[in-house]
Length: 96
Image (cartoon, rainbow, N blue to C red):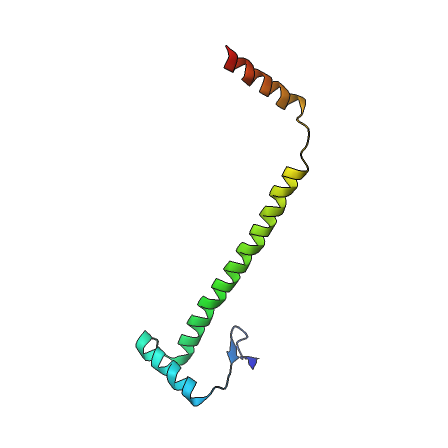
């Protein structure tokens, strides 16, 4: 359960877990050099959340990029006069 504190700048997160899990996590706290179980949970949850969000954003960006790329291939515009002139000038320079 999450509840707001008096300062309204932070929140509280309470959870219940089996004793065996708590002991296991406390061992990780000691071995990992964390100051508390709370610090351990916040640190590892934040790290995992960043990874999940980053991966999801990359997927979304990749999908968007794919749509843009394939739309450009499938819906090609005809070259304008400036582009045709530039291509002709390029060909002329190659032949001289």
